[in-house]
Image (cartoon, rainbow, N blue to C red):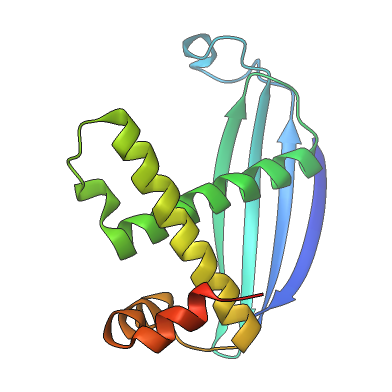
Length: 153
């Protein structure tokens, strides 16, 4: 078994992620149900905040051999994709959109992502502590706010 740990401090918490990877899959009872299975991994994440400690485990299977470092990277990339999907669904109710034309779906998706990215950039540039939804609401109520969001250089 191979392992690696990484610790980061951000947003007032210390997060330690430890990845475990093994290529020994012979023991797995249902191995035949996954074609070309050759790698099993786990990531143990420990969070430490001023309110205390917590932890969680995530398990992975793969059809290619990965190092523990690669497993951490791929798990992070998956999280960023899910994070963007969550933002789109929460702020634009994207899962409820019933547009059937594929071109219109793609155009709306691009516009929604552009809007979220502009708001994130605005938050960074102004060091705003407001939630994305609050900034979006402010843009609806005040044309000067939306102009500030759109006119970032």
